[in-house]
Image (cartoon, rainbow, N blue to C red; front, side):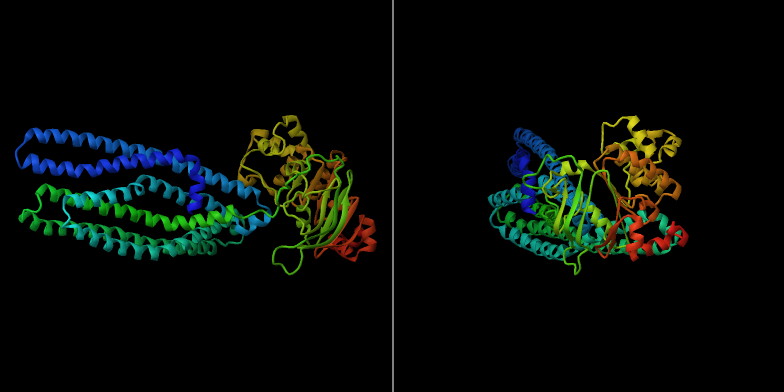
Length: 577
């Protein structure tokens, strides 16, 4: 946690120095006030010296103004530094997350990454703010208070020792109990976010299967689990402040009790006793401020550990040190002895993949669920990196290509099309910000989406909700296809992108695509044979291996697995045709 604070507060050193300087000013001012008060009582009130009372009163007023100004300035500097710290830390976590491959994102999970970038950063931000507002002044006031109290009377100093030790033991015990609870609390916030996100995303499925009571019970379980942990933390925090106030009040009574004997003996004046009591209160108040620090610090330390996990995780897809920035524009994709395995997996997901996709050629991939089709196409834009072999574009290993160059040449329509909140136009311009309206309408027409976009109230400017939940699955797929067409890439990857389309729309879309992608390399992953039967080559994938390659007609003769897939979708006479 300390390294994290130093790293992200370093650019704002001048603000931190300002906080320390202003807190020092206000601490000295606050320590000076009890002495002035004692002088007014002993030298002014006791002797009836009105002029001295007025004189010292004006000095106290001036000192009070300095104290207030110092506290206001420290608050301003502290707020600026803590907000800037939180902003920079959130930006770093976000940048790290964007660099992750699909493997790292799956490892942490979206709900946990969101919590780490919001709630966890907020804990550290609060620590910085509270440190600036109170904790910097606490040791200054404590040390200065002890020195000033001893100046007033050494004989009562044992009361300070007893009070501070007693308070330290009580606070230390409570903090030791709270630290593991804070760690558990952050994990339970992750769980609650995950459950809530799943239920909101899957609301239609929940209602379709009448699972509202079950899901409500599941949410309640996560909610009550977090509430129980937070309540246990709250009980200990609730105990802490009464304990502090009890020690402070008990110490005040002890000072008055034992101090009265010293006043009676003439060893101490009334004003000095009053000043001593105020200094003791300041000392114990400083301990109480440190208590707040000790309450915040354990939770902030847990949050810092979770943030460091993200910042210290390196993506398995690493940008090349000396990237290739120019390649021949042939758009040929080649897989040479490619294999892919997840860490710790007993069996590879993909093995011995050898094939190429040339410009103007359509390559289709078909196979059973879990055969590795999506993983295979994700290797081309480097969403994953092959664990063996080489995936190359125009003869250059994708791991050596400049990522922007590679991504600029690939148009990916994922298996689960995702639309961002905004408008139809803003989603279509995602890959080409300067695309004209004419280009957008052209892409929508090819994707068979123009008709329903035109029927929308505002056409291209019609709103799209997060995830595209205000349009149907088929409409989402067609807008995603249009988004790739607007970009005009050299390599198209359609990962089961026609599954939500009816047969007629599927056929019309594929027919419209032919002239548009005539010069590009096209890879299509599909479950529907009718979608790929016209492909130049079809790869039949099974358990991560290519068991046969050929055209539709060739595979009907040479590949029993492909024939079985075809027969499951068509009648025997249609297969023969």
